[in-house]
Length: 217
Figure 1 (tube, rainbow, N blue to C red):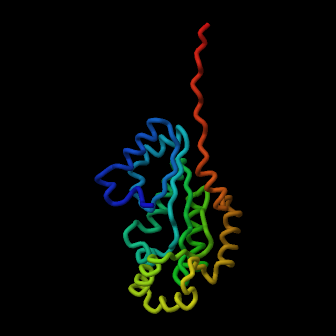
Figure 2: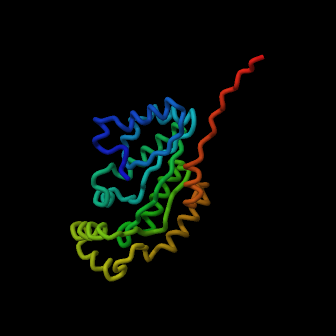
Figure 3: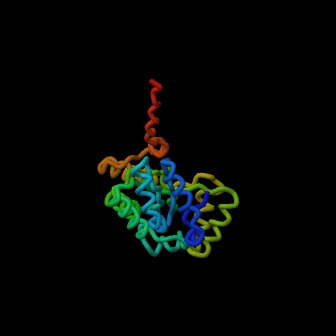
């Protein structure tokens, strides 16, 4: 999976062309990105949403801007993505946030979670996808991740290796407490939670009216 708004999209315009075709034929759309470049195509997103349904999905994991720039160095920061979500809200385009991954000992804190949830509440996101407070590490990915830890968080690799070994699921020690906060805040503010429910919503599109058959008589 790759982001439809990578830097090269600015010149290539392939995503915009796809949106033009979707809009032309009246299809619905669910699109996921970490980039504020999605606003370039706001005109098409609005048109698609008016004809059918358009949902924009964005990942938010790190409230602190400085930490975000370390964890996600090649994309716009969480604050910019929050601004995108507010613009989508103002244009009546529904949004879904991916609260994943949350890295143990790095951004698995109550302050971080509450900051992200405050953004979601203000932006009136429709739902939040969350697989628990943690992450997954596959073979190959683990080596890359540990090398990144060595660069940005010296000494943390040993803590991961001691705690998680070669586990695929790497869940935070704070997971249960933070998930209670997550559930409570979503309930309080009417934000959809439950991944299956949200995925079902993303796949639901209004039926297009069937053309009326003309009578011969």
